[in-house]
Image (cartoon, rainbow over all chains, first blue to last red; front, side, top):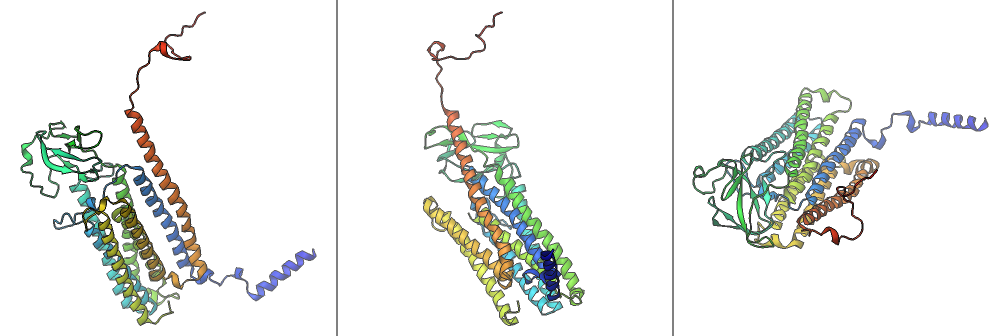
Length: 313
Length: 143
């Protein structure tokens, strides 16, 4: 009994002195909202890391993988053979919008309502710009280059060879192992003029032809003569690239794009609130701007790694 | 925040913009260099590919550090907060090693299966077989 008493007495003493358990003290000297935003971002980082690691594992498991500077080499207004240029512009848009977000948070600290609204507006424009670029990129990949979640027409040669023409004769188009190719749809334009003459001359019915094979989705898989390695002298045809590429690309960049989209929505809501003077009246001032700022920087942070694994490496 | 004057922190932001933009440009340059776009033929040197990959990863991690510490103000938070957010991500190192190793193993399995598929098996006459061979067709059940 004596010990119990002393414990109770000690607790009473602590309470009088104001213990950490009595509340009123912020752990880590951060507000609840900001701390929870950090932990949400941590959990979100694990989600993205899971996707990116899955991408890495599948890429390591494939004998070949589409080369990014071949896949991502087109830009709007008919620009071709410009590897990574368009996606670099997209990265700049996110970096710039991140910087304008920092400025909005700074103006929030000064309780400068108009400054907050101005810089948040620029941030929103940057975010919408990024989404528009991504919409173009996806449209180009799906509608022009015919890559979908389960079809990947971007292949890589594993042996050297020379392409055959429509009649099955050798052309002067030679390639080496490691060269990339895009399987086009039969007779369809693919956004780029090769100057191969009139496609309409050829017979594009599905099935086997002298110089090519048209599959059930109307993809035209060109035939070629292998010129080195153990299979030299054999005629083979272009094969589709690793199937997982399309699904991984659309799913991961889509998930990131969805984060950008929801970020833009919340930015708009908070900008309107800031403009209405709501945060001027609040005890914690413009903390809402800080919290959406944390989220927005995180979206930029994730893009650093998406950019790294999908486009740079 | 509050550690720097308004003017100073404004300057720091624009410094950050230039820094991130320049690092991104360097990354794109190295990526294209490694793929042989800047100087033709470099894409065939395998050790250069690994070096470029390493440079790109280090630069990306630097960008991530800069965004977290400057833009997200982790530098100005209490040490405990920074540790509680950053330390759990160390677990990802394990995930990276485990899953990349697994991916490589899948590739080796696929190659193995491909090689096995190509193997030609010679047919052996029944009388030449040594030991017992179970053949359902020849075994008769009596009684």
